[in-house]
Amino acid sequence: MKVELQNLTKIFPSRNKKSSEEVVAVNNFTFTIPDGSLVGLLGPSGCGKSTTLYMISGLQRPTSGKIFFGDEDVTDLSPENRGIGLVFQNYALYPHLTVKQNILFPLQNLRGKDKMTKEQMLERALQAAKLVQIDELMERKPSELSGGQQQRVAIARALVKMPRVLLLDEPLSNLDARLRLQTREEIRRIQKETGITTVFVTHDQEEAMSISDMIVVMKLGVVQQVGKPQEIYDDPTNLFVAKFLGTPPINVFSGRVENGMLYIGDDAVLAVKGVEDQNVTVAVRPEGFTLDENGALHCKLSNVEVMGRDVSVVSSHEAAITPIIRSIIDADNRVDTTSATVNYSLKPHKVFLFDAEKEERIYFEV
Image 1 (tube, rainbow, N blue to C red):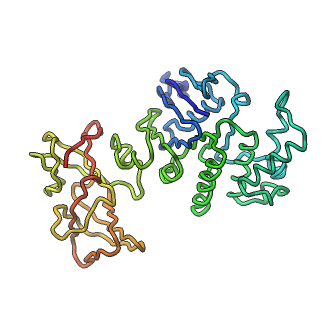
Image 2: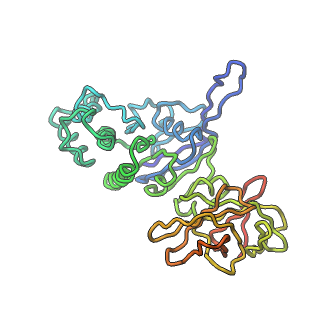
Image 3: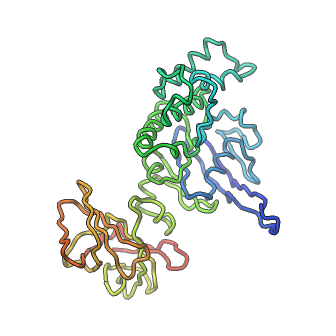
């Protein structure tokens, strides 16, 4: 099911009695979610991603704009008539019901032509349970399950109605690191098997990048960039996007361009053709550094962390905006830990320039 958002805006009244200033949670959001895809809404807390999800679900009504499921305008439809499955951050399971009863609950509320027999409901519930691999837990109560198992029950309950659109609101935030990894892989598997159009809300960029066909990066209710995860990582449109995506985070410096050469502090680090002389903000991905004893970028060495196949070199520079510089190099390279400095050359395709004030991308030729 294709989902189309047209100029979607949500404005909340001010909670401050002394101020009448309204809060714009989502501002003029226009985007088409392709049929059968998994799209991640990504951004920090308060960026409007969950509000967008709740407008798609029908739990919140947009101030303006339209929502289409396929060719059907669902803007004014109630949640139960939209054909959506919604999984909340806190699972929202009924503690007094068994797993089977929790999964059956949405089917028991169907009326009219959609009403099912008891046998049909049980068969559908078992299919959903098998899909998320909890069919052996059907008689347990939520309190007898682990966090990951509870999450699977919540997903099965959302899937049992065979929804047109599946909506996931930070579904992994209550799980530990290992379970998060396992469960996000399960979500991707389930989405591929069912082919249900899925919207996944998260503030964790690693989650969004690992399972999404497309991601939408948001800030203060405004869409910053839309695209495939790797494309956005490799080609951020502004400094916010560059800083938000990537683990470890991108390294940021104050720099300047003079006569086609990029300077970080006193170091002339890279030729940048086509850029006018100006002050710039320089962002370098951790993998964008090459250990080079003749390299132009001279950093003060702080620490070397061996991570198996890679080595993380922690250093500092007088022009760095980020507190530390973290570079990832191949473990075959040996860092002289007795030296006070470490020298790098930079990979041009891993270096991004931004306007020092507007923080918009400045493109250059190598």
